Image (spheres, helix red, strand yellow):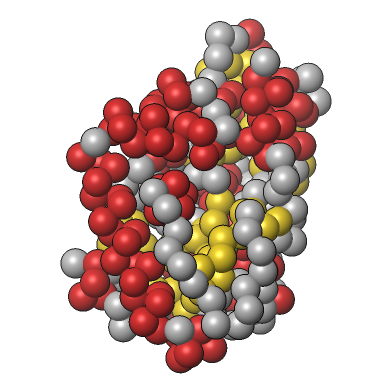
Length: 315
């Protein structure tokens, strides 16, 4: 990072977000203590696992975003949860205890900066002095940092409005903000005539997915977590090999039209992968960048949260 930085679509969206609580909405009843409690978002590899059928002994809780997943981990209401790369860093800074047990291939096309076609904005540099909406602590937070760096700008050069997806979309549609940085499937839902993609994360951010687990669950529910990871790999491989069937299966689960699901999945569904020291180093660079910008308090050892005990399941 350079010193410059270091110093009715609305209806469909309502359905997509319906029933989601910031701190933890549940799609099934709370576990008895012996069940594996899984936190997921409507989009991501775990969604396909759920759509293909949860196994006995699991409960699944639905969340709107990665930060909400990590809040549930901190509260002890889930055992494992799926997020992007930034939420674990913010969670670690907030003293949430967890381990990172799997990841995915990079998904840079799965998040983007959206602007209106008639806005006159042709490059990210044109957003200087303008307003940008994004979800604080999510992957798009890191994409903003990288875009500012690329264009020789700082956080002081733009007006950032931290809005959750349910708030960001109407703010963008109504012109309350000039740009919206968002991820799939909200990204795919917002693509329509009059909206253009200003930039995505290609060459800037990996935008990987991560499965986080509580230390207690790793000790007491390791066989169940291993089984979940096996199913995660199988479901992901099946989906990549059968994109048409995947879209048909997931559209009802995602509560979005099948063509939207197909478009989002085509660019955002990637193979699951084991965590490695290199993945830890990648996350550490992001964490150090957030620390330098004072977006998190002090240095965070995120590389030390990487746990390779299930790597053989994912190779």
